[in-house]
Length: 251
Image (cartoon, rainbow, N blue to C red; front, side, top):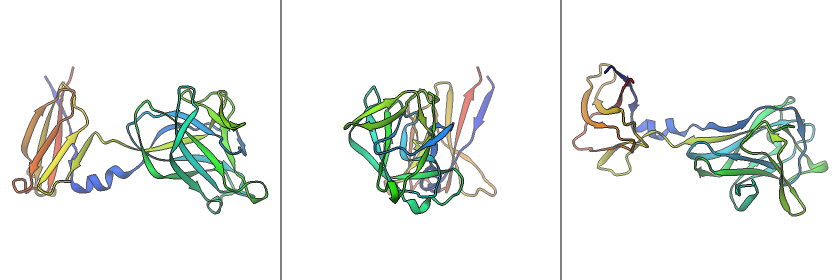
């Protein structure tokens, strides 16, 4: 059978920096208007990726009198009602709201939350300034554009849902990597995958020079659907670069 290869260059820098970029996990990008919502308004959503939920982004308009707000992250029940305690807190300062046209603004959580695929979550805002002290108009869509959640609001001491409207929002996540490096043990260099395909062969290669690479095989494993792991004693593996070949059979 014909084989195809996908290559990954793995170094210690890959672990520290390349995996730190957040990506959009959930979003509702449509906007049909703006509203100055009060305390407790927010949006429910369902996580898709396993990873660290680092924050959310909102589409905000009207900066004639901007206001500061805290943003809370919650788990929710099946109906989308937030469940105590809060998972994380973010903050947006009115001094950052300076554009004269609608724009996206990022709110980072104080502690990234380790979300799981399929988990029901919600964010809500708490106004720190309002009225003459400042307020914000947040983007929304006035129909059910986002099927995995809806707008929520605080009323009479409880959260209620508004199933026919959604915030304009993004949830930002650092996904759990499919391939990662573990250098936590001083004498071990490890390469790991979170899963493997049962119709593929995984080959770890190494070399000392990427300008004129001379790759050599150091380990070969058949995929089984389960995670794979390769641990090498650093005193035996002196090469500075590693490559994982994934040889998958075409059906």
